Length: 329
Image (cartoon, rainbow, N blue to C red):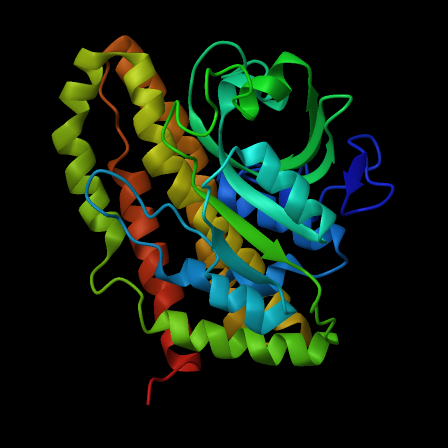
């Protein structure tokens, strides 16, 4: 029996949102945020509305915030309800039951068995990631899933390994994966004006949790401190660091800029100016990730002080503009 939550959806028919388009500074953000962008877009909902949380992204010390849309925001904006799934039996059995009941499953997965990661992790490296299961055919061993910037399908050995079917006892051989149930039976389709009002209220709430000090100033100091060790550990170590830091910062502020431009559709100049500041940060991180790779590979000076100072200044400017628009009670 084939179970499909989204009739007619195939990897070939899937259409990306502009946030994942060729013009995006960071076409892929992180696995969790990306699957929500793609899934909401496929449902005909506007993912730009869910992005207020990016205003609170911070430098955490050895990484930037791995940003995720809060589940309460998804419910408030779209009527999409997400609850943790207790994986007490083989994941495939859960998938069969819940997809048949009209729910989707968001779960951790090993990128080693995900064919859409060809060229990076597929059949090369075991790396934890998150997928959203939308279509399942057990007899044909096929799974349709959202991951990163697209919708994909896996089969055969990839299917068996993703569901751990070749383990002696799939229920007990390894620690269970973290998984969530996604309920879409109460989806709410709001008009643009109502959605913007709700999203603006969420922006005010998340803005109250913005960093208390400039995160790019702290990031610059830590980068100068850690660069010698990164050179010693080599390029592979650098790429892991860059994913957790530069890419997360760049992608988060690109999303924040896109969100503010969406809110400013009625022509609010301060929102547009703030968006431009955060978009500048996104572009600057694209430059930084390349400069850093060259510096680690060659041992030459990084020469990124001006770039980092510019990001710190853009953050101050953008947050200052938002502070005037979002005064706290």
